[in-house]
Image (cartoon, rainbow, N blue to C red; front, side, top):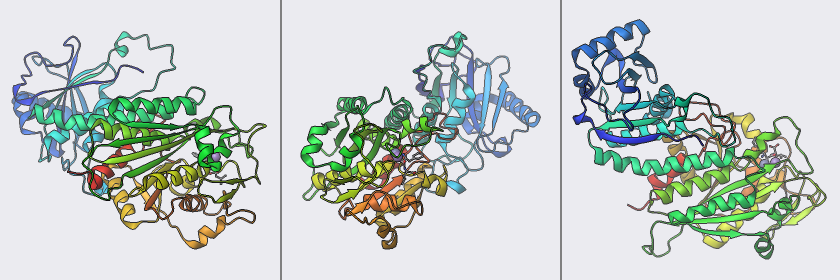
Length: 524
Ligand code: BES
Ligand code: MN
Ligand code: ZN
């Protein structure tokens, strides 16, 4: 991986633009980053730092460049002589420089994570920047603003270049970007940033897992990566195929039997409550589909775009990243993460259409299409989790159906649930984080479509309502536990580039679910 961005904090009050700026190495050109609203309104600290002359310069440059301070708009100019920075970067905040994300994302003028992404994108690799965390209007909690900016910087800076042997010739490209955030209260900013930094760690882990090729990231290797979370105090249990056989997980094993790579189920547990658990306490649970490669099996997929199926483990990657985030910030919650890791391959041992397997729940499943493998994996993992842990709820994430891309594209994940409260909470945190979910219907008439002629249930209900019948299949294996299923086939991978993500694997869902935990399930 290229050197990640280095982030530090300094006191806004001690800055002197005419003396040496506090960058990390103090040996290259420096960029001074500041924020401006409409009519070039600057924050009070920024105004006094720049002085009348600096303010006048920005005014003139803005007229020339038609910079209006709209959200995300940038003004990139050479710094005047006498300043210790060589470049001034002005970032538009729009009308309201508020860190308040209670509003609908659509109506929100900007958010600080996105602005951090814009800053990192403009800085480019190797820059040394001092960022004035100071806004033209009330910006809510400024320490939180600094944390959010830092998150945006790190998310935008991430690059997966592990397998590029030829690095850029330009030596400057090789040095890490460094950003010093100038804040009113350094200690408060550091504290706010520490928690957010764990969330960033989790997102970047999820992205890297999704980006890894399937010849490297086999189920066993993935399980090994998940096991590394032990260093953060996460309890890790790995089920191998013998253990699954003993549990009667015929649905999972039917998928796994076609591959030379043995499958694994990894159970992660972060108990941030310690022994401090009340009577009748239940953990919360997240389950992820981790198909490390999906060829379709005997119902083989077409060649076009099949390489994307290395990302069919984005649900499991999210759950792993989420547990890393929660453990990293020592979240006061008892949480289970369960991931089903398996490769779906054709071959002499592969399962066939028409096969009937018995799941751990005892329900028999007729395999109609071996490419509908994700739901088979989730059937046994969800059943196991509800049976063993009796969780308060299960949220599963899966790159489950192409049909959800037809319905929702790459804007919203599909949400399916048997519980209104859990759904409403997911929708709310979706709006707050920008990782949006759209609730889709469940109904008995859809459920009937997966009744089988020969077994209890069949693994495909046909083309109509493909994402809904897939959700109904999982629903039959959660046993009345409050449950939500997120179909993230459009979100986890092959993501359109934006201000905070330039990576193929997006790490989608870590922010969403971290926020769900923080807002509704964390002890205070
Ligand atoms: N992993 C795929 C779904 C998928 C498609 C994810 C495109 C990401 C992008 C899943 O296992 C699958 O193959 N689903 C089938 C189900 C069908 C056979 C009932 C599908 O969507 O076609
Ligand atoms: Mn498939
Ligand atoms: Zn799949």
